[in-house]
Image (cartoon, rainbow, N blue to C red; front, top):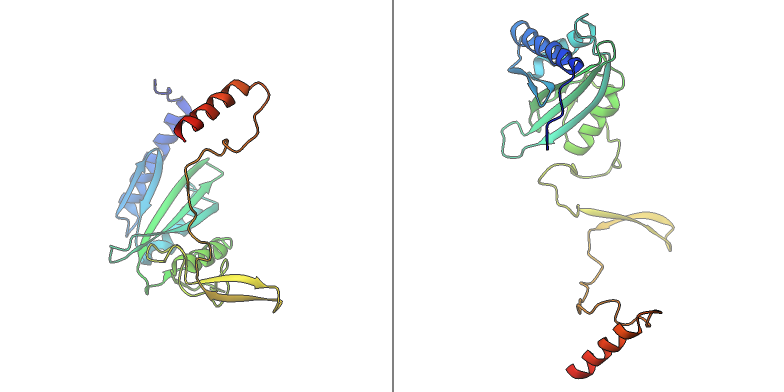
Length: 220
């Protein structure tokens, strides 16, 4: 397939993002990389620099990333700092986006950015709930998707696919109960017989039905 031509608007946007990447890499401390990846600006920095960098990205006239669109975690169990915390920001003023990435481990907290973007409070709670990433300075860091008594962090790569417990509503006790995970469904038997074999002959399919019956009799 022929590649779609790049519009002049896209060229200008790529130019702005490239200039911003160069500015960040040469003027902001703690940035290990700032480059375009598949047309998007991705910046990697350290935990201790995340707050001043985010404040700069929000307030600087050349940036104006007014909205914190998303915060999510990524788990790489083989790394010493196994978690990546990924921030996705949007500039409505300049119609451009940026992704900021930091790393941490299971015990080292990440500074909360909820003071810069109040909406980040919910995203940080989700990251804590699902990955176990701690956020220092968060006003109310507790689980948000699982219940308060839940054990473990479901999106870690070493969390079992079936989980540790299952939750169900007990009709007799009239309450929600927790039990160890059990696979209550037996393994199904497959006889590999076509599901159409037991059906009545459809109108217009009489000849095909006779052929099937003849084959069955010959095999018998």
